[in-house]
Image 1 (cartoon, one colour):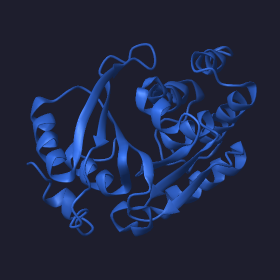
Image 2 (tube, rainbow, N blue to C red; image 1 turned 90 degrees about the horizontal axis):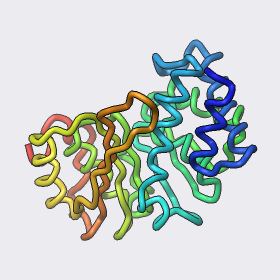
Image 3 (cartoon, rainbow, N blue to C red; image 1 turned 180 degrees about the vertical axis):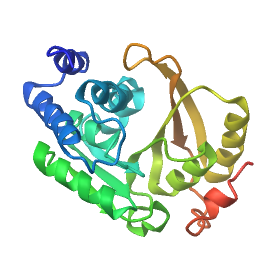
Image 4 (tube, one colour; image 1 turned 120 degrees about the horizontal axis):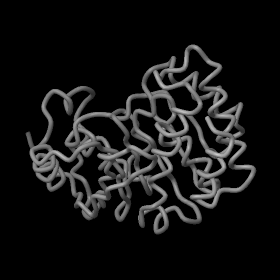
Length: 236
């Protein structure tokens, strides 16, 4: 990684020297921990694939409108901590919940949070479908490489407050999946607000952020019990 690469990323989003240091600590933990739950651990690659890709969400209106000063964000299926951990650094006045069902990944994220001093992030080791305390309490829900979009919508909708939004990281656009997602969204009280093409780093050609707003209350039967959404996706 070039010495200036992290500085350029921090400058792109107006981050402070302290925030830059936190991002550097995250990269160091990824590189040093052989048990990190990701194949991308090299600092140069991780800067692009994990940090820059996560911070691209700061280009969306929804982050300014809903959590510019404060708010609650939940990263569903957080894995190694992205995008939620990077956004927690960038949005220090917001509360960020990293929901992950695998204990090994939860332990890794907790180590990174401690090493980087990200005081506004916490790990919830649970299945997202079973997180009853989170229902209706989130301004923004995040999902990156989690599941087919109708499944992501079913997980996210019950967690959002009215007026809140889901940001779903996707690659190349797929007309069939988008049609299925539109059908699922209608059942869940969501509406598509934006599909933003982003280029978080050089060479990232087919990266899109799909933003859904919660326009109506989600029917109480959602989310269905654990595993059902993946087996029988809405709209498919």
